[in-house]
Image (cartoon, rainbow, N blue to C red; front, side, top):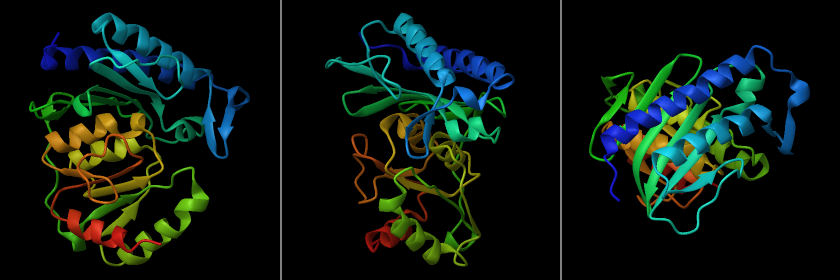
Length: 263
């Protein structure tokens, strides 16, 4: 079966919004006593787990033959042609601290090709979405990447949980670009950083040691908005790795060149 991607994407937007509504409601009564530590500085709670189950149940109804890759492991895949990639709450640390943004991220892949991506930013009520060759949108409005050169660019250099391995890299990036670009930001949500590149709010984003659920949906949204996405080594086949570089296209090579000299 080849689903109608336009129609399916809009249905997935509804699923993401329903999960987002649940997350928003739970945030009002959420207690840090509910937080579990997966490993150092990486947290989860019943909110992540319940949101994921809500999403998995709804997506199974939309496309019963698809498998799943989910952050909290509530569903699996066994070689299905289509596979959902789900982050039920991207930016859990932000959520715990009442610090926006945090989001629901849902992608659909066919083999190693991303064909659908939806990211719902809960605090701002913004739904970013795209389907293969269909363009990228936020709340119905078309998205386009920015046009800034490096000296006017706003960059996002995130801080992944694997701090010991990544500290030399983030120091290298900040030392190179601080004072060489407009400024540098850290958002705490990979999915939203990618969407902000697609919307022209950021001009570039780079992060390593992240999961497929963190970046799959946002990567397609960037591509459909006219941007460029690779891994840290410049490969366009990034979907099975753990690093992502997304830019407006104009500054991609400079960012890759800087990464090529990383420690």
